[in-house]
Length: 468
Ligand SMILES: Cc1cc2nc3c(=O)[nH]c(=O)nc-3n(C[C@H](O)[C@H](O)[C@H](O)COP(=O)(O)OP(=O)(O)OC[C@H]3O[C@@H](n4cnc5c(N)ncnc54)[C@H](O)[C@@H]3O)c2cc1C
Ligand SMILES: NC(=O)c1ccc[n+]([C@@H]2O[C@H](COP(=O)([O-])OP(=O)(O)OC[C@H]3O[C@@H](n4cnc5c(N)ncnc54)[C@H](O)[C@@H]3O)[C@@H](O)[C@H]2O)c1
Image (tube, rainbow, N blue to C red; front, side):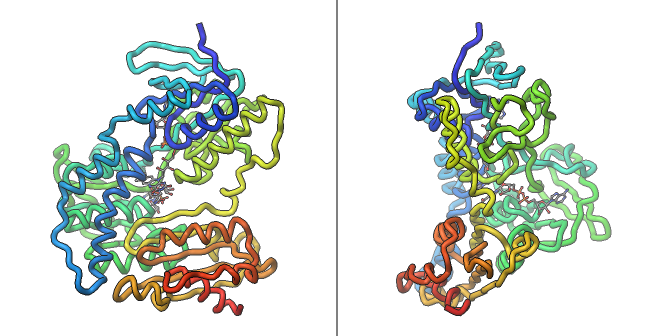
């Protein structure tokens, strides 16, 4: 006999868990199906462990810039132990207890859509269960690392984000394919923890290509000083690893081959939509599930299927998945009551999501870059400022290097985007997110007075440079 709930969520990552919470708050009954650990990729193999590994590196950088302080060797075993604590030792019982307390039903197993409003679950014990939804099914299955079809690469069994964030030993020589966020963060973490020869192999011309060009350039400069090698315009033609877990050789076209003890592939993500039964409702297995701004799947009739988080491909960030999930849970509850609330819409993805890259220097940005704003047809003026010449930054450490950019919509006199690069700028980002999302007019922003002597005075300097 089928179990019936108002809502069935597949995937108990950060996005899925937030749908559960909001739908139950809205008065609905919910079951959530999870095949691995409640908390998702983010909690165990992505955001949380990566930031636990990066924190000592960040702090060591801060200490090195303040005369009178010194730091001994980093105790790698202690860092890995703290990472293990941060991921709850890969035990999700606390998260499961929380789901039960919402209250919602937690079902451990692999979920597959089996026609409209039906979810077939293969439980971890090998049993079968069919769940039916009165209102909606929500896909929150996330994404997995994409491994490009380079000859020998799969056979070499390389690390992806999954293995590097769970590392129990640090390779002496690490090759990293990719120049995006995972590549930069994990190259810095591994190098700081003992990967003496760390080499990034970047297909394009620089790091962090989706951000303002100076962001990647400043991270590359910092990497060069630290001894992390970045090779741009470099394609991996072939990979060899004769012994499983042994040395790996990367053939790089014209350049001599590169030998390493471990290889990390950080070349983007693909949606976790294989073996999810999408074909049973007319969608294609392996594709992102496209949604409207109420998070409802656009290509499925009768509006019962929703998708939140990485699986819809909008913005692959935890906070954005959780934001979508809050909207989605509220929308489903409102529609179940017969309300259609126009305020419940995903607007934030359209502005350009806030993001922090936790390298040293940190990079954070929200909204449009100069290039994307111009491409979108805005009449743009760009204002740059050296963060190092703000008193608050100078006081943080000697030789502070940082840069800020504001992209101004000249027709409306509001900010379209802001980027900060520098040590400790991550906590500045939310001020920019508010300014961009609330479309605060510049002559109003002028009255938001930053405290002296904080790095936030960069706001004043940007506005003065603009001409206020
Ligand atoms: C190394 C790394 C670092 C990152 N750092 C950050 C960061 O600092 N900040 C940030 O905002 N973002 C970060 N991200 C991105 C972030 O991890 C993702 O955006 C986030 O995890 C997406 O959440 P989600 O709930 O959509 O999916 P996930 O976290 O991937 O969760 C999906 C869940 O669904 C389950 N599932 C999948 N298919 C099925 C099925 N058929 N049946 C049952 N269960 C299923 C999975 O087991 C998983 O638990 C990072 C990513 C990586 C790789
Ligand atoms: N701090 C954070 O917010 C954080 C940290 C890590 C990851 N994430 C999220 O996770 C997602 C995945 O990160 P990522 O770094 O894997 O992806 P990414 O899209 O940021 O970078 C992918 C990199 O791989 C390169 N690449 C792509 N295909 C390639 C190929 N065939 N051969 C060689 N290089 C190739 C790209 O040029 C790029 O440099 C991102 O969307 C990111 O937002 C966020």
